[in-house]
Image (cartoon, rainbow, N blue to C red; front, side, top):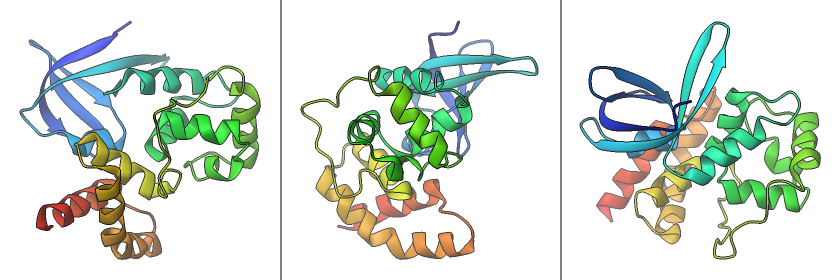
Length: 202
């Protein structure tokens, strides 16, 4: 089991990184918010979870140990694999998920790509007594459980912007997001970069 990956980022895609760990480069699958928060050449340590299948060995990486714990816990739900587990974390933070489960908020969970109404109910039923309570210091924002909004909000706050600044930036890029959704789907990395540009101008 690979518990963490430490090294320099040599390539970045919308949902993965290549990290130089010495004699080899390791491809690590990440959320869009994590990918866009890093830069080529930056030194990084990712807490990882390795998923082994007959046809693939995939390393998933997280900047926060709580994200890895939730990623692994969500996969214990019947019918949910690593792809949907990662989509959960791309849509909401671990504490957003805890609040959704505690309040039986299946509607918020169905905003996760690949998770329908029945899957959302399974998550609530199977994790209710196992996922724990949300951190007492965490505060839900108006964008905490939205689809693309949650990912962009998480990406901005992970880069050091305040929740209020992140909320303002999301308002600035909403028109762009609406255009993307009309054309097919929201492009989180593009939206996050646009949000960062709006903050740099302020």
